[in-house]
Image (cartoon, rainbow, N blue to C red):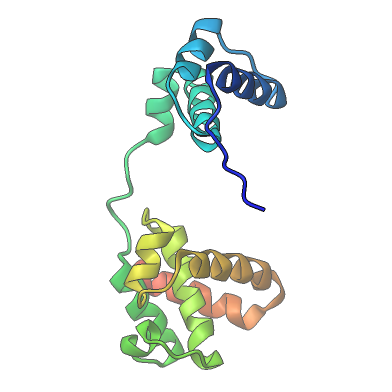
Length: 171
């Protein structure tokens, strides 16, 4: 069965915005909701517009400026992290950025992802691209897995700290 879905009309968009506001237990001025509902859009765009409106209504200009803050410009680079981890685990940097999936490569690669996420301002996509064109979801998975495993694995914790110190130039 094929069904053609049409974008909602203006009353439908206004209803979607009101339902989203109720769901989030928020209220916005009527004129803001009317303006957001006046532009034709599909359901996904209307809900994305709601998220943006909610965020803008939540923060003031001063709070937004304070929250954004300056980007990290000092500290370790992705290359210094890669070199530090490779040295700590006795590998070549080309092995860590390669396509190999052996355990001896994946664990150090996960340490690279973890330290890159903690010590730099790079996005998951940038980290993934730098370390051999991986997917951002791979970086996210590695960071979560390593964060869960560190409290239980003293040897891994010691290697991560040694790699961190070397990347930061402390050793």
